[in-house]
Length: 420
Image (tube, rainbow, N blue to C red; front, side):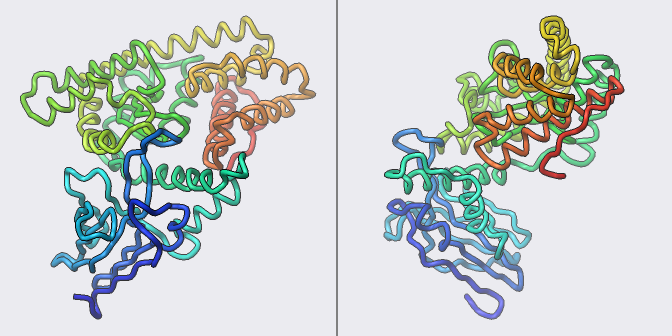
């Protein structure tokens, strides 16, 4: 019962299937306090869109029509509904005292998105991003475009919080030790430069083997130290992903693993995550730890390492070709390495190569060339999509130049990024 140790409040905005996130994101936040522990959240309803636009799913505010109940462990249980009608679809969500959220295994539609207070609230975050980034290209459709933009922001955030925790602690240390003992420490020359910036740009200090989601542009599930994106890559590397899963679980009689392999063989996850519908999203996040288990198995690590060796050999050849065919790469090696990074990210670098060549001819000095290249890549659609994407572009360029300077003893000035 509500009382001194249990309090609940929720905004008075519309909710459910007939509502619009544009009209509700500022006033649907809810708050539950149990024995002094406060939990702020936005109740989320996700459904499949009839027609794809930006995401394959539509986001609205879920309805809360009954009082949450306190649990003995200091947490609470709350019922989320698709409408205020008594017969509307619903599900019950349990939140523990430490904030862990548990959903029924069959749930595909209802979620709690943790919220902050004041300037850290989701509504304020959305308002800031709207002010900084949103541009209405068709005045007659501005409301629809704003709705899609808000939906995109929240679904991107949702992807981050819905992903399982990354590999940490001793497991992470073991993964990185294995990687460097087997391959990393023996790499030299051009391969060493590429390894340095590719690992910084793609995985940072995380596991070289685990599954990831870049939550950017058309990214799909990815794995490995150079982040093989199974949505955008093709051929042997993606086939190897299926092979790793089959080698790990192909002999199992466990029903869940058999179902996982069926989804892998059907290539269900080999597309951008924003194209996943609710059913695929549910199984994807449920399957993620199992996929990690296969990728981080001894056979999975060995198979990925063979892919990585082939990748380094191919980029070494690519760099030598770029240097041979483009005088600006011979003068500015970092530009050739950056073209390799661009290809790793986008799948192609030919357009960038031509633009870099022109910039090199026009540049008055090395820092002018850096600035011109930075301006070029920041003009790309990916970089203009969000502040986060622009920061990612600046970070990647800076890491490439730093790695090149370290190898060649160069002194090319480092461009500023969003941390400067």
